[in-house]
Length: 159
Length: 458
Image (cartoon, rainbow over all chains, first blue to last red; front, side, top):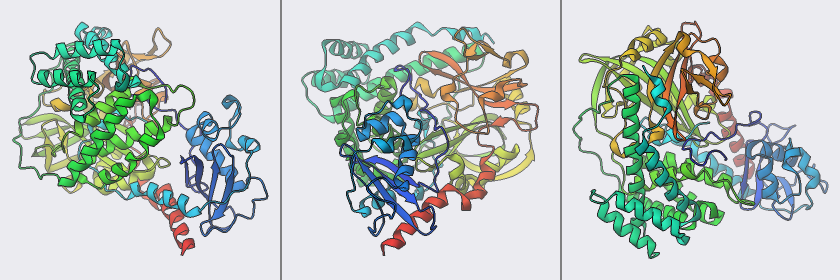
């Protein structure tokens, strides 16, 4: 977020295109990882849990019962590439590059897939359940009741 | 209507803003390392409250903070003082605006307090935790925050979200925490929205002093015509506001109503239209069609907010919102929405204004940005929606705008634009149609994907 330091209401930058919710339902920068949930391109029943670790550049992609993604052959699979694309869209290239500790000029990065070649780490398995439980926690908001009470403080927030 | 009077700002308001800017610098660098300039600002603030009801408490708080006594009470008093200055600025600016517009200032109704349901004791504990967390932010300073001091508060916030009595502070804190986590971990020196975060911090601190009881209401009945809408949104809340004229037996008055739904960042307002519709389907229908609403015994607060209850509203005949706006806003009654004293802030000021003909034409200001009747159009206040686009201003026949104040100047937020069609361009007109697409929409995709993961696990 940037803008006039003496302003109260600041509209954040808008996304370059809408998020592909069906392909990448969930992406976040959390606990030193870029992580999320990616849909299988071939099997509507299958969902992958994917992550990149900041600093080390290690990555992994697996189904939720920890079966590794068949596309992982020492380098990031297409699910991990999709995750990077959505992360750059949602958080902006500067933040993703800084968070992962990559060496790249944010001005030249238009898509997350441009960052794949800069990932220096290798395969490193983590428990997919951890990312999945983050996804469920994230979804808690959509089960909260709608509100009719006046919320004057929402005047500070414009999208 | 000498709107040109609004190109300047009363001197006391400018002076107060300068004092607050000095105070807000202390929030950025942190109360744990106050520079002499910050101590002087605190002393000046304290002197200006001398002899007022909070004068003594503020003297104690400033002295305590100066001695590095970090207790939440001192910071709560500081938040109250900052809010009081902004409340006074709000009142001075409102007086200026109403004089320029030639209309009476809004009058809050006198509604006797009804015995409010007390918030459960668990709510008070959560607010204690909130004040503690907010104090830690202030001690560290906004520029020096670390993820380790932000993330643990998420668990407290999750518990606050489960308390209906705390929904107002929950809506604020989810937005504030989300914004902080979008900046930290920071690499290099982050750009800090100083005034904005000081505003959000102070408002949260004031709301965390004690559970705020639901506002007192009286039943209101009559024909309601919607004139304008506004959309507020952060990653976790969408809030649709409608402004209208309610013709009660005692006469017409302006009212405001609000429906809100919680959400996640990937969802946009259309995606949660079905959630908004569970609360206000009839309101969404009226906004889409331009129909009036017959209101029967709906709760109305002193500040002019109708607390929406769909069962107390019924669609009525079609109206011409722009004509109603023209007729109503030429001489608006004093009975129109305002804010309770503790909610007042210049950024919340909103006066509906109608412009037509050459007055509503868009011209380029000195900085090349659009202006209407000599006042800048505030694009920072313009919600992203296909229902109302900045391009709609070109060649308009009339504009209804909210007169706004931010960054030390008056500006306009266009909220309804007459393009010669029966219904004006207005935010939220598409929500009634969007509510039906819920089955194929992003909300159900998220739920379906989560269920796939659940099934895989077993």
